[in-house]
Amino acid sequence: MLDIAEELDRWVEQGRDFAVATVVAVGGSAPRQPGAALAVDADGTAIGSVSGGCVEGAVYELCQQALRDGESVLERFGYSDDDAFAVGLTCGGVIDILVTPVRSGDPVRTVVTAALEAAAGGRAAALARIVSGPADLVGRALLVRPEGPHDGPGHGFYDGGFGAHPELDRTVAAEARAFLDAGRTGTLEIGEQGSRCGAPLTVLVESSVPPPRMIVFGAIDFASALVRVGRFLGYHVTVCDARPVFATRARFPEADEIAVEWPHRYLERTEVDARTVLCVLTHDAKFDVPLLRLALRLPVAYVGAMGSRRTHLDRNERLREVGVTELELARLRSPIGLDLGARTPEETALSIAAEIVAVRRGGSGVSLTGAHTPIHHDGTSAPTGRIGSVA
Image (tube, rainbow, N blue to C red; front, side, top):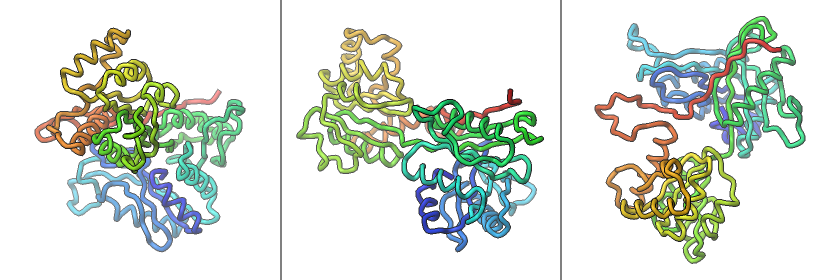
């Protein structure tokens, strides 16, 4: 649901009642991942998607039914050869979808409203909802926030609850924050003893975190195209260059941030994490060497550097001379990008973006035609937690 938070937050502000269908689990070659959602308001307006079109019509009807009767429901959609006209996924996959009404007066509305407001505002939050278990608990929600500097364990970092045992709320909140810390969405299985409600539970945890960062070093024409592609992929894009005549808002109007600073000095002071991608387009040793020496030692997702194969070999030797190890050099993607035969800045940006996606998702980068690899990859697939008991 949090993938369409901005639109749903506006619906809440307008006082609309709506029902939301959220992908809970997938199997096989399903088109959307857990957390993907479709919402329908009382007037029949729909936003979002759960399957790319395969089962949208049936899910739309489930949302309308939930708005009428106020009941949450879990439905499974798969592929069946028994009936050519049955609603299902033509790709052969299977998806489980939770449909939850969010109407004025529904117990879940306050928690969902807070989650949507946080996600729409770019603040980290995780929404935990019961997917399966006792009927009176299905659809109930709990909101988890990052722990503040003065919060002790189990204090002040979650809102709402499931209306069962307080220990269940605390247990799910603690587990959900582990998902939030990793920026992941997935399901949590809680055994009968651990649930404190006499039955096992399945909980969907949806995490919303600020967008990942793409830092482009080198304010060149290729950087302008890469900024546009990076924004399209959902990155918060920074352009950094030590030359003020090139690093300007006029040249990079779509960048989220422009830093006029020596690249390695900027990287020393800025925040990066395991989702950050660093694209070094300067191919100038005085910039590249101190920058890459630092970048290759940071826990970031991707480090790529532009240049010819000759430039790459020369750069590697310079990096070895300043103490970069072979293990660190192995992290460097250079020459940057996949082999698409790219020539223009736009084609080169596409090549770089394709490599970033392949690294992130664990793809091979080869043509799907004639290949026997999965179509959908997820190198950072969501964890599935399991709790058997509570001490």
